[in-house]
Structure formats: C-alpha cells, structure tokens
Amino acid sequence: MLKSRIIPCLDVNNGRVVKGTNFVNLRDAGDPVEVAKIYDEQGADEVCFLDITASHENRDTIYDIVRQTAEVCFMPLTVGGGVSKIEHIRTLLLSGADKVSINSAAVKDNNFVRYAADKYGSQCIVVAVDAKKNDAQNKWEVYTHGGRINTEIDVLHYVERIVSLGAGELLITSMDKDGTRSGFDNILVKKITDIVNVPVIASGGVGNLQHLVDGIKLGHADAVLAASIFHFGEYTINEAKQYMKERGINVR
Amino acid sequence: MEIIGIIDYGSGNIHSATKAFENVAKDLKKEIKILRIHNAADIKLCDRVVLPGVGAFKDCKAGLVNIDGLVPTLEKKILDEGAPFLGICVGMQLLADIGFEGETTPGFGWIPGVVDKIPTTAGLKIPHMGWNTIKFNRAHSIFNGLENKGETIVYFVHSYYFQVKKMEDLLGICDYGSEITAVIGKDNIIGCQFHPEKSQKIGLKFIKNFINWSP
Image 1: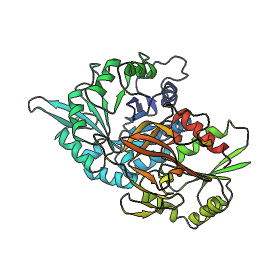
Image 2: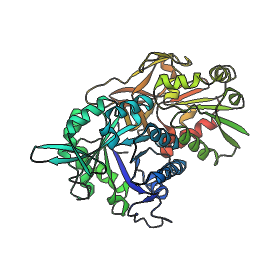
Image 3: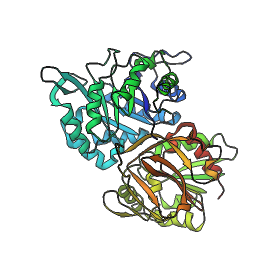
Image 4: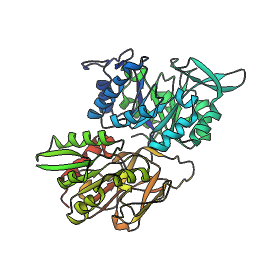
C-alpha cells in the first residue's frame, strides 16, 4: 500500500537556504543542493523548495538550483514560491521539478489552476493554501502573499473548488501553528481530507516527532512537511520514520 | 560504445531521466553515451531507446507524432530491429492500443491493452501519488538484484493505468485498492508506470538492469 510521506522543506532566498541549516560535515550548510542531497541520503520521500526571492530579476536562480538538484538527487522535488505564469511552471518542470506549487496566483485566478492542470496534468499541480482561523466566525480564511493579505475566502470552500478545477495535491499551512512548534492544526487538516479526493500535505507547527504521527493519525494527511526539526539536526528523517513506524504508520 | 537515446519531445521529466541514466552509466564497465533524441535521424544511431513521459496521454502522443518521421522510425528500430526499449509512466502507457484519458486516443499498440482511469475504491485518492511496493509476477532480468518481499518500493504519480490484455505481458504490480500495473514487458520492450529516475537507489538499479539487459 501507499506509504505516508515525510517532506523536508527548504525556504530559499536568492539561491540560499534561509537561516541556514545545522548539518555537520556539510561544506556549505546554506546551499540548497547540498542540503537536498543530505535529505536524499537520509531517505526523505520528497523535498520541497519554497522560493521566497522578492526581486523578479533573481527568479532565475531557483531554476539553476532545481537543475543542479535534479543532477544529484533522484527523488521527487516540489518547487513553489511566486509561481504566477504558465512559463514559470514549464521552466520548473523542464529544470527537473516534479511538482509545482501555486499559492497566491491560484487565489487571484482560480482558472490558472485549471489551465495549468490541463496543460501539464493534475499530478504536477500542487495548490498551497495559507490558512488562519477566524474564531469569531468559526471558519478558516485563505491568506495570500506570504500571509500578509487576508482574502476572507473560506478555506473549505476554496479547496473544494480548486480541486474541482484540477489541483492534484494540497499543501495546507496553518498560519496559527506555523513557528509555534505545537503541532499541525489537525482539525483543519481533517476537515480538508474529509472533503477532497486528492493527497493532502500537512504543514506548519512541527516541534517533535509525535506531531508527525498526529498529522497522519488525527489529520489523516497523506504527507507531513517540516523544516526546522530536520534542518537543525534535532532529528534525522530516518529517526522520524522509525518513530512513525513504531506507532503503526506505514512509512517507507 | 553503446548509445542510449532518450526521446526529448518536451516531456517534463526529460532532465531528471537523462541525469539518472548518466549517473548509472558512468559507473558501468561498458562505454555508454546518453543521447537526447530530437528527430527521426537520431533514433537510427541508438542501441537502446527510452521514452519518458509526463502529462496527458493525448498530449504526449501528439508531441511524438508532431516530430516528422519519428514514430515510424522508432517502430522500425524497436519492432523490426529489436533494440531494447523502456517506456516510463506515460511513455509506458503509450504502448497500449488505446488511451481513455480525456479524448480517446490510439496508442502505439505494441503491447495489447488499454489505458483507463484507476478505479476509485473506498477512500483512495487520485492521483495515486507517492511510494508504493511492487511485486513481481514473474522473474525477469529487469528485476535483477531487487527483492520480491515488500522492500522494492518505488515512486508513482499517475491517475490512469495500463490494463494489459495478456497476463503474460504483466511483469509487476502494486496494490492500490486494486491491482495496478507497475511493470509490463514483451520481447525487447519494457514499460514501467513508476518513475525509476525518482525512486532513489532502487530506481537507479532498475535503470542499470535495463542498460545491462540483452533480450
């Protein structure tokens, strides 16, 4: 049967890993290609690059990084950040990305997702959703532009619509949880996995290995994404898999 | 020197596939050149041919048909001259008689069968995306050095699958609610639904087996 996936995620700015990583024996802990190689060796199921480069002139850097990564890592690679044109998707895929993640552009024009999925197939179109709970109205709202703009769109309505247009996977980041190290928003993740029929990646809030287990068991996520717990050497991917396996999760 | 041609018709995984083959080839005893194929004339130079493929069946088919003379030259190379062939993902699905993804589209018809949507059974998601175990239906050189007890786990991402007409052409399966075709083979032709270029060590081993295979 299909295995639950563990996905380390790297934020990349102008070709460098943001805040760096803490791997010993690594020539350059800020080089995304070197870090991806480490995760490949540790048995990560996939690696995700999120390009947060602000200036458009430096956008080409990420293509080079994807190209170099695909030369040394023979594992699935998802790349997102600032993807707003079909040309971006095309270039990323040809550079060696397997999946492209779309965030703000999908909210701005839902049909961009339809067009992208028609052209390249749903299997490579991931829609990333930044979600934040609105307690007063008891709903989650979609945020864009790196969490700066509240669109007030209901997350549950949005994911249903975007999947019907062709999104092949959802990457759900809880802004309430991100950076708190208190676990995923499993209530939100579960609500989403209940209503869509595509794989869902839970993101935001991982502080220990039990949180990864909870994302699968409580959130019913197909994959769990984490950054800091892996980057700073607290846990290796292997340790995470061992822990999950011991708790009955089907991992590779 | 042996030339392995990888057909470049704008498919997304061409870069990864080329790099994976180069990575395997550099460690082998025989001298191998990995050549990206853009036209019919290049096919004639090849000793082996790889057809990668990502995206929709009809788009991939159209991409190949649009290259002048490519498909007839490929058929001559593989079906008449017997050069070993590997189709990956949609590159494997194109070997069927017909594909039902979007518009009904004829395939090459090299291996009898049809390409249809994965049956959606209880709670299983489409696309079938991620790492899954393959089981071998019968022994084949392509599986050399790989074990058949559940540890051969490879990366899949697809919504349609190859239904073979003849069981003898089915070399490997995976379990996704129902039995899904993972590897097919007939004479000098192999097809795999999974992505060896993305399946880490096991994928590279599979590629190595293809390069060493003498059908």
